[in-house]
Length: 130
Image (cartoon, rainbow, N blue to C red; front, side):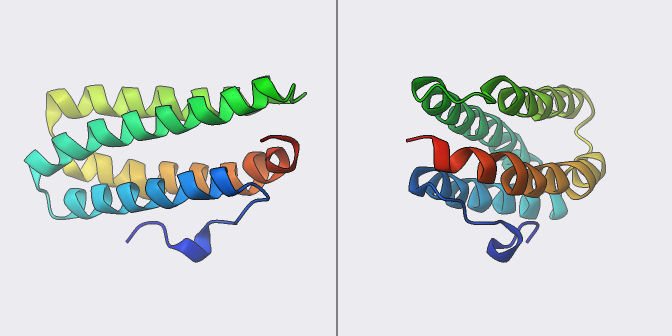
């Protein structure tokens, strides 16, 4: 398990917390597939993770836009940062099929970004939207 529920701060917005639960489940399933070196499952879940995060980011961004949240662009730019990294690693995965490299990315980059993004940006944004 890469991300445990206690690693992720609850925020003052029920929708954002609900999105996190689905993300955590998918991130952990993906991580398990990577550790098991299950190439077919990694293929499936890598794409699913990118789609899930992008959908959830868009939901948050729409909520911020609708409520006129002042720091929307800064929050969105943090989403864009991990979108680019995920796309980059997915392209490398498509060519190299290297579970070890993906595992390193998940453990060193994604987990840190994910927990910090929630504790900083989502926690700051949640009271102002939806």
